[in-house]
Length: 154
Image (cartoon, rainbow, N blue to C red; front, side):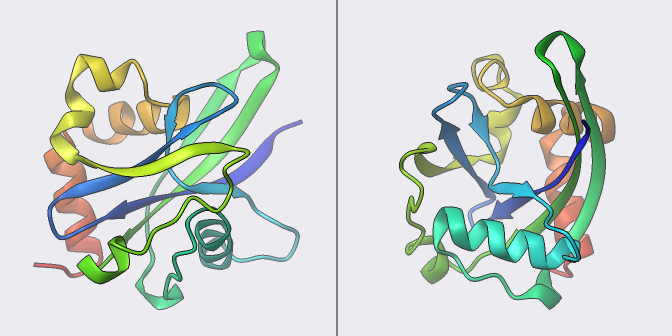
C-alpha cells in the first residue's frame, strides 16, 4: 500500500533546519507524518509538528516546496511525501520539545549547509535525501532561498 504523508522543513533565523533522529531507523528526519482522511496538507503539517515538537504552526504561513516519491520495494515501503516549509522565530525555536520520546531521540537545529556534508548525507532519511537531490541537486542554499522566497522572508 502506498502511504501519503507530509514532511515539514522548519527553518530558523540562523539558516538552520530542524531534524530529529528516529528510533526505528536511526536516521535524521523532518517532522511529519501520514495525512488523515479529509485532512488538508497544511492541517496535517500543523497536527504532526504539534504532536512531535509541541510547536504550533500557523496554517497560513506554511508553504509547499515539493513532492517526493520514496519507493523502496526491497523494504516493503512506498510513500509519497509532500514537503512543506515553515520559518520559526527565535522564541519559538527555543520552545521545541521532543513530545514523542518513544519515536525520536530528540530534535536539533543543524546548519543548512551541513546537509551537503557526506557525514550528514549518510544519516538523512530517504525522503529528505531524495528531495534535496531531485529539486536542488543537493544545493542547500537553493533550498533555503526557495523557502524564503515562497514565504516572503528576507
